[in-house]
Length: 263
Image (cartoon, rainbow, N blue to C red; front, side):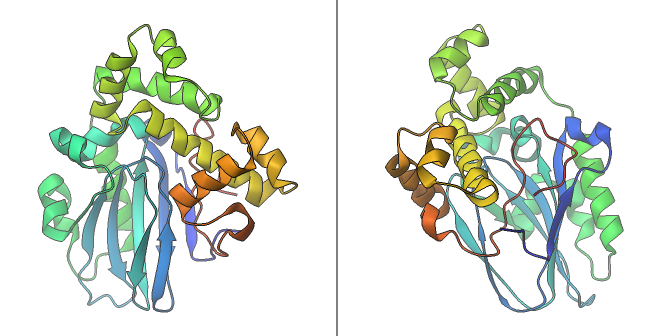
């Protein structure tokens, strides 16, 4: 299964990988809607149109744990920056605790990131949008708490989401309660919620890109059995492993593989 022709993502420089997980763009020639999968990250996005008289809109997403649909018109385009998981507070600040599964649009998004409000003018070029978004994210310093959470995020990805919270807290030399509080203030999710999303995306890659028996994919992804994997895909994708939608946008949120293009 390949990504839709109108969706592309990449990291532009090695330095960006320290703060930016991907810079992506998406364009749609016809009206319709797209399924957006939850990935536990925050994005800052500008939505614009091939018609340069249409005024762009700023979008800020919170860490998603549920799939949702986005409707669009012919010629709609998006350019966005997907932040590293532990950088959610860069966009949401103290509001990160209530940002789960939230999307801020227009004026609400501009209130969160007023530095980017000037991008919402007709006729602005894509290169200008991309450079402004990347500069904004790179210019926001990560807190010490964010650095500490980032270490645990990397461990979760190395284990494919199969770390227990107790084991992860022991590696971080803190209590499970403190680790969850650390994640809540930087990622915007509990450790378990984030690890479950990592496991889901790993299973999705195995089913879509590797193929083979679904029971083997479930085992490799760390699920108890195929039924367990099916429940996870229903929860996070709204589909079952045997009926994954064609043209599904599957961003590379594998962690630790920055610089690779999405498969």
